[in-house]
Length: 209
Image (tube, rainbow, N blue to C red; front, side):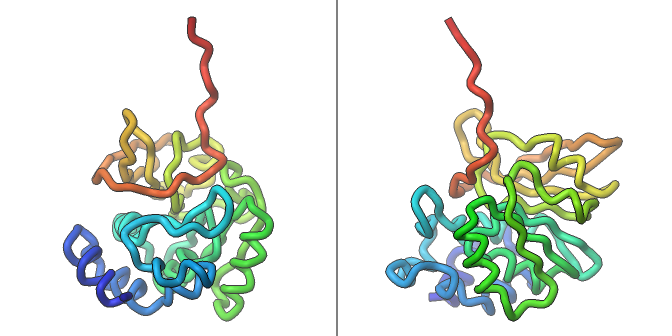
């Protein structure tokens, strides 16, 4: 099923980085989902991991990592650690990873699942706050669908840093790559792709007559 995911989902899209393909072919996604969901681990959709939370679909994660271009020279901030799957992928690609999860139970599970990785640190905190103590980061990966990306995360990017996420734009889930310039980020949407909602990035509701 993992080989099929690589062949039918990744190689047929623009996931062209061989390091990303190798990492996703190596890391056992089924080890990061509940036992009852293991048979759906490689399906082209989100996989439920707790009430109101699902792992991002493999294709969305693969395309985000492909555009992030993380290398061993990068320090990465992962927002939405969930059960640790994407952190495990990033551990194969980047020099170090700080993975933030705001659900304490999921954070504890991620820490357990990632115990064998020496270049990952799991932290519990609000997704939108990031983890300023270890900033700046050369790459930020938001592994889920958000309504907006707050300045609090942008401020944690190093000069010439990059950030990837799925952003709800005009009612459509679109994958985006952002690059910093003079303290601001310009975003380029590069694909329409379904992604699992990540809590903590909801826009404030405005009052209308």
